[in-house]
Amino acid sequence: MIVSTTPNIEGRPVTTYHGVVVGEAILGANVFRDIFAGITDIIGGRSGAYEESLGRARDTALREMEDRARELGGNAVVGVDLDYEVINNMLMVSASGTAVTLG
Image (cartoon, rainbow, N blue to C red; front, top):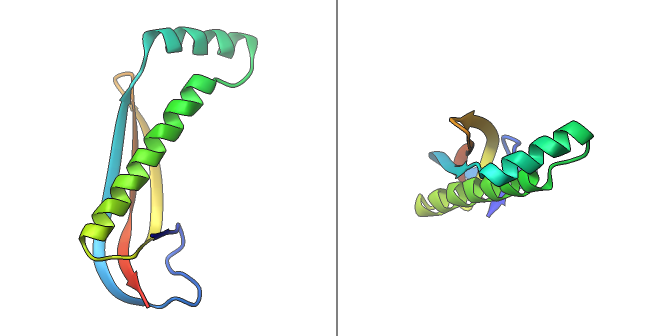
């Protein structure tokens, strides 16, 4: 499955548009991870725990989006957009794009 933020794939014409597909992932925050992330923020540095959670959420959202594109008969998703939100101490990542069949 080709996944791209661009509206088309060079050298591969779109033969069929299947519609918009979306994948979402919501991960709850862990109290202990929040405490250690707060310490990291105070002393400086990167928060590996949050980066790991963010990566898992992004991968899940993209995988769900790809699965929905396959269900519609697509072999690619173009115009992909990733959005990140925090809702009540939970991290939400959504991936959306247009499922297409490339020639």
